[in-house]
Image (cartoon, rainbow over all chains, first blue to last red; front, side, top):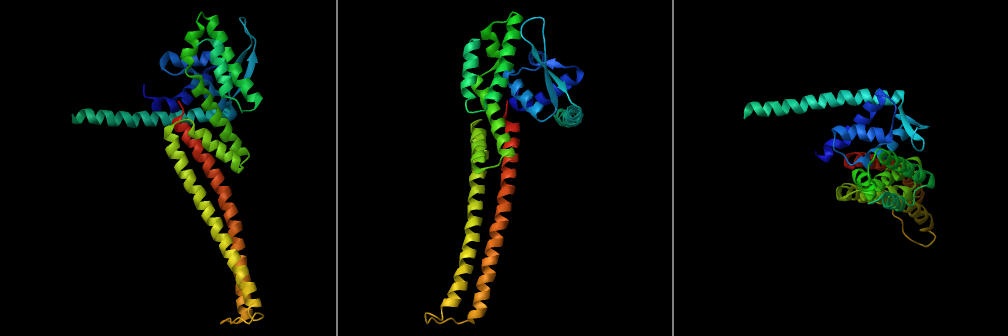
Length: 107
Length: 187
């Protein structure tokens, strides 16, 4: 898939997943790469940036296997941004689809 | 690439960042490896999925350096941020370096002009005062010329002060532009 497409979308995916429930890094990466083919390492710099911007916080939680895991929890600000991004995304997809379908009609 | 190689490269490439940041970043990847291994994946497989550690490090670096430039806008920090952004790719070389050099050029020009006006004002002031002493011939009223000198000097200084505000504005603009660039570029 086109790299340019993924960049903005990744942020939206992370926020949507975290609004459903708290996740640790590996879980997020796994959930995203199940649907979108990404370089998994790109998720962590994004997580760090979004956390610094205050869209979510993190906490450590013991796990039954291995060392404690870093969980991410969305903040109210993160939820607000998420909703804005979803609106933008829907608007964008609708627009692109209109163009694609219009082209089909002309062919 | 096994886990140790991956972490070592990442660590080396992050050199120069605050130790606290490096530790936190490495923790995330340690955890990623440990969870992946727990699920029966191989180290090679995990590092391949993560991607090139050099690229990952660049992405962290650019963000941290830009943030630093934003919180603490000194010329050195701004230049560091520009360099880190350029390091992300050729695209940035063209779209960051060009405008940046242009901007710096304009700022130097503005300061030059302001300094020029100030010096001219001082020159006019002293010139008009001392011209009669040295027997020079000033075609305008020396007192008028002296006041004109003072006025010009004041104008030049005002221009200098205005330029300082322009520089502050340029700082903020540059940092914003770098952020915008990174958001477009990063993978």
